[in-house]
Length: 265
Image 1 (cartoon, rainbow, N blue to C red):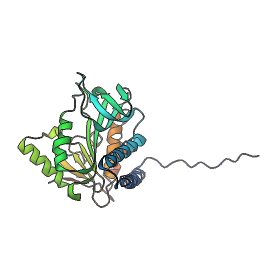
Image 2 (image 1 turned 180 degrees about the vertical axis):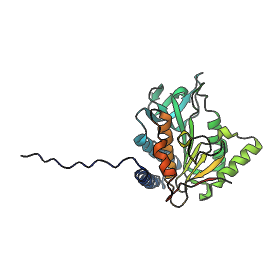
Image 3 (image 1 turned 180 degrees about the horizontal axis):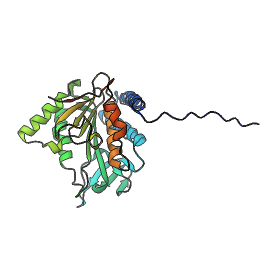
Image 4 (image 1 turned 90 degrees about the vertical axis):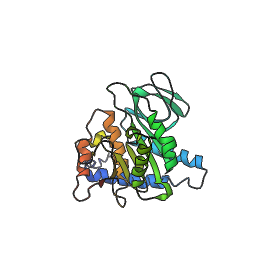
């Protein structure tokens, strides 16, 4: 039987419209998946949503990064509280124990806390202390990326300025310092918030911002996908080996659909 040589069409180049379309689709998939367990117990809902975040990252990150859940071990052997999602270098060292891992701090790239609803009480009593307690990565090594991934804000609020209000309250009464704030907050039913000066993939772009200030990243109506894109690009940038800003910059500067970037107030 004669073998047929079917035409092979090369994939489209990695350009702005292709990237945007991809993460728009990923947002739709994640949005649907996070609602699969809404009628189950709170613990089950949380576990399911953490799984979907780890799954999303595992499918997108470079091969030299590893996604897990567990604890961080510092140089003295002290363990952190359990963290929902840990991203670390495969070249680093970790101690797997069943479904969790003990990740050594020198290989840590990011820690991510997953919430169904981000509430003020949990922000101050759980997230801020967790970020404050992260071990020092050592001289010359970048601090791990601090991320909060939530489906919605407290009381289903669509006002991202809530985060700025909480930050100002905490700084004013001494319960937090700027370094304890998340570098990136992904809000699935809204759009992302970033901390200015914290994201390496935004250096030398017009979306880098002033150090320590909080900014809206993406419009509420049509750019809810932008936070997912930013998380993947930032982790890829921190993995080393390539400068991914060349692919991100055209999306940020697209005159037809500019990514919203505005200081929270």
